[in-house]
Every structure is written in C-alpha cells, then in structure tokens.
Image 1 (cartoon, one colour):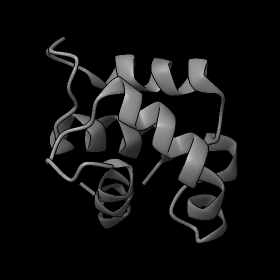
Image 2 (cartoon, one colour):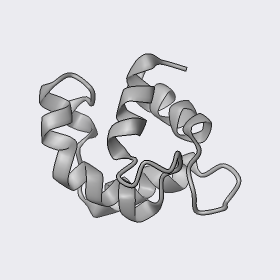
Image 3 (cartoon, rainbow, N blue to C red):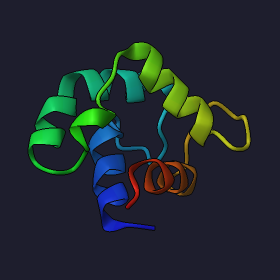
Amino acid sequence: MSEKARRLFDALDLNQDGTLTRIEVITALREKGPTLAAGGHLPFWGLGDADAASALFDAADQNGDNLLSYEEFAREIDRRFGW
C-alpha cells in the first residue's frame, strides 16, 4: 500500500482514532480536499460532493462494519487513483 494512501488516510482521520467513518470522509474531503489536492496528496478529479465521498466509503468498506481501516481505505484508494 502506498505512502500517499497513508498520508491521505491520516489527513481524513479527523479524530485520529485509526479508523474512518462516513462522516469523517465526507467532512474531511469537503474541508481539506482542495488543500490536499493542491499539495499532490489527492488527485483534483478525486474531489467530489458528499455523494461521491459516500460512494468511495461504500466501495472501500469491504466488511460492511461502517468503519474504514487503513487497509480497506488504502486498497480502494490505490486502485482508484492508480497509486
């Protein structure tokens, strides 16, 4: 799994508990997404609205527990963004 995925996961983990919730992903992408994209940590085309962020969450949540581990997140992000 890529270092870019780790940096993005850490940036989105607003409460720093080592997992991502749907609300964290939506909120963090809305608030931090443009800055992350400008810094090269997220492709600009990866920015989207709440529906796109929610769809990303659903695609990554392999075990259906409504939490993303780093491994789940990195697998989907590396695949989606080609990292």
